[in-house]
Amino acid sequence: MSYQSVNPFNGQILKTYDFHDQAKIDESLDHAEKLLKSDWSKKDLEKRLALLKKVASQLRANKEKLAQLMSTEMGKLIKQSLGEVELCANIADYYAQNAEKFLSPQKYPTEIGEAWVEHHPLGVIMAVEPWNFPFYQLMRVFAPNCAIGNPVLAKHASIVPQCAEAFEKIIHDSGAPAGVWTNLFISTDQVAEIIKDPRVQGVALTGSEGAGSSVAEQAGKYVKKSTLELGGNDVFIVLDDADLQRAIKVGCQARINNAGQVCTAAKRFILHEKIAEQFKQGMIEAFKNLKTGDPLDESTSLGPLSSASAAENLYKQVVKAVDAGATLVLGGKPIDGAGNFFEATILENIEESNPAWYEEFFGPVSQLYVAKDDDEIVKIANQSHYGLGGAIHSKDIERAKKLASRVETGMIWINSLTQTAPELPFGGVKRSGYGHELSELGFNEFVQKKLVVIPA
Ligand code: NAP
Image (tube, rainbow, N blue to C red; front, side):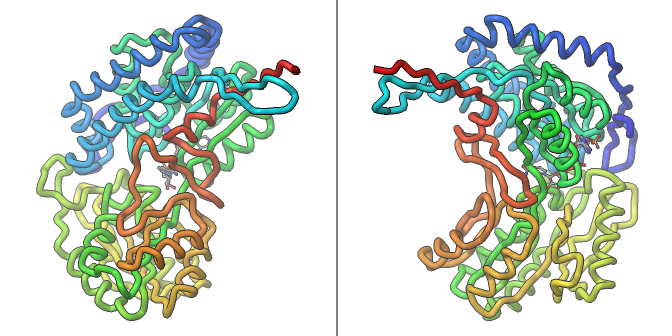
């Protein structure tokens, strides 16, 4: 696959990029290694944090331009693109403010004597990232590793090369020395070779289960630390005592944001039988009122999918689900025209034997499940290969908290959709991956922790 920027709203090819060659990869690894051995990584915490602050201000100064690029290259609604740039700046600021505390030595009380753990850079990191949040995904890796002193080589998704280039430019223009962040237009085979390289110590991947499995296999073979942020099939649970109108509004938003292409989007709606029909009718009405159009037009509420193949694959999944017995309540197919638009879709009557039960639908497709009580809700929720995020809606917070503890997932939000913030850990369980990004937990993933002991 080549690196090609195509506007998903109209199919126009915007720019094509050649793959980087081995000479560029070698040069990037050399720069990264040199940086790791220099004062920048070993001593200059203040300079690294100043860079983060500069990157945050550069992002804010270029917000409109970057947001427009994102919306044009992968179809995100302009308001969401603007929000993403601001979130990236906030992540950079968060680590600029907190990294010194995270990196300070930690004492370990022991009868042996004096003991502490020092925090050092782990080494050069390979990052492999997806297109659905073209700047935020990169920032989740860049900000902590910049603060730690780990040089990063980054392979972005092949459909967002302009965003990859723009992100690298922001860092470069903020005064980063060579090697802090290097964008590479490379193939998956080249990624595997980089992971194997003795100069590389870790790999962070966000993407699909298949990509995660392949990268983790390579990392395991060469004993490199890895983190995997993979797909999800998140539940959106609505109990019989929920504020129903609010749950419908939030639930629809949680399914439709970014045209449904969010790892933590609400994908499986598990509805208490007493409110299931009302919820369904509310969702049908809300979905019928969505307006497709140019992502740059602020009145558009449902943008195109990121690529023509994404729309084709989603359609195949819906057809397969219906063939296996699911009922199509609404939508179900791509919308004719130049863009990669897909109808807002609702499926119900999905049995466990239906492949759809276990699959992630990466687009505006809701699955509705009905349960008679909290035990059945938990059973349906946990009958999943994934465990990324989730949401529970109820006016009885104690009941919601008990359910939250029983659902097998890395994150769960009560009376909200799943959100993200720099200070909150982000990560999943089961086939949603392992490790964290953001917060202190994410920061620690690629920190070398060294125990020093002086016996009494
Ligand atoms: P993808 O196809 O797995 O691509 C993600 C990245 O991995 C891209 O850069 C891709 O490169 C690369 N890649 C693919 N196969 C690879 C391999 N064998 N070795 C090395 N790199 C490989 O995923 P996507 O379709 O872009 O993104 C959607 C998926 O990401 C969904 O499952 C979504 O839930 C998940 N996601 C998870 C999170 C999270 O935090 N948990 C966040 C966002 C998205 P190419 O583009 O060149 O193929």
